[in-house]
Length: 164
Image (cartoon, rainbow, N blue to C red):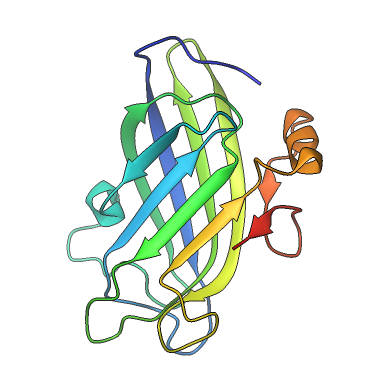
């Protein structure tokens, strides 16, 4: 695990895959937080504000791979937790998120890449009837060991993280 220098700023690149399920897209505002094993987090209150797609692009639509980038404080690596939240607004609030990949890098800071399998609805009208998804790859000893060994895949069927 690597600790960044105090006040170091990193660039975060975020890839969000919306599922191919019918009505899987949304018009809601999505927020995201990523964290390290020490409990430090970078919070993006409106992920679309970090969007890199062309002007007028419709984010979070069925089958889309949306790309975002922004700057924030460097965290210890690897990044091992993800909190994804929909505000439930818009005429179509339900959203099916397949996965989120986060890469962080900075000057004299090791690059960190983590893939979080979300694989669930963020909706009030579809199971599990919640507007947030938390993928925790930090708290489980087996996940911490896997992360330290360079295996940074958390949640869902392919990872060992807890999806709450």
